[in-house]
Length: 107
Image (tube, rainbow, N blue to C red; front, side, top):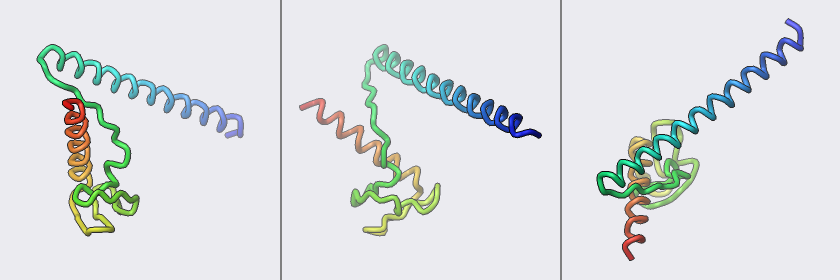
């Protein structure tokens, strides 16, 4: 295959991944829109939480470090030693952030 063919193939792959990213982003936009609509309809609150570093933050001592995540599924805090499934740990951090956000709204 010529270098031109390789370049064209690379451009197609990059274009497709960009399209896939756009579609995925739109899916999330629609998902959030539907959640907001349902919460207004049923009477509830939708709290958006920034997920940054929630998978690296210890839900016991709040220490945040990249080293806390040695693998995709395992979390172990390098400061206090707390250990659990990484998704569970991140979920607890997101819940805490949401509850904190709700508490600030009530003030």
